[in-house]
Length: 313
Ligand code: CUA
Image (cartoon, rainbow, N blue to C red):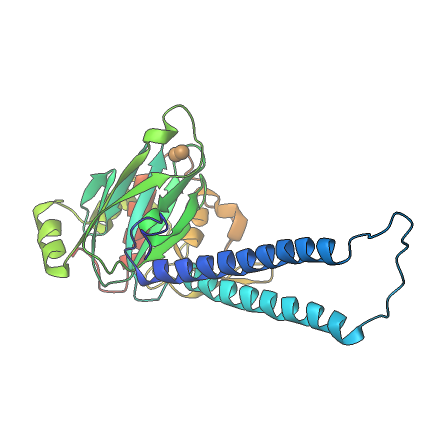
């Protein structure tokens, strides 16, 4: 059906949901556009002026009719709103269990790191039937990650992490594109998403022979930058201990608490003064400029692994 009307192939259930909504919107619009045109033509004919001196007569106010033509469109637009909100929020909130893969966009390529340490450029291998969450950022300007087969895209923005999640249900190779004009070779900033059976994917990951996982590369950076000089378990340490921090709410001096996710750790490393942990002094220097985006992701992978036992797979 989807190729009948020129839509790209679908590779996830979510894509079908977007298509159904899209077809519904098109269908409703077409129905009313045609209805209105037909009625215009019909009434123009029926109430045409028959003699040159004919004058129109005022009609009665048909209250029931007016209510009907307000209520029906109102109900239809509420359906559109609720349906659209559902499709959107399904896209927006990845399931907790989603496997994370890290994407860095730069003029003009996509760089991908798997947690195992395997890396790819302009290719993204994923297992079918498993939720995958891409955590994405850009090294330079705004890009946008777009997989037509999933019917969804997300901006890739320098200085922050954005999320794109999907669950592919079809094996094969599907194109992805940059969907935000980002300079000369924007149109070439594209790649292939390769959906494999989970077992084949595990084989691929093994053969990609990364050497070291992201977390253990991050551990090296942690040592190199001497983060451990301040971040110790001891209560007298200058910096808070880091084990088991990931995924927990953190009390920030001032008022609020922030969930310790990738974005929180990123901010803590690059602009430590912005969210000082309650009970600590803002003594940490910034590490802006000392780590590139991929290293930053490795360091964060290491911090995430601390105290979770997922370390050094
Ligand atoms: Cu990157 Cu367009």
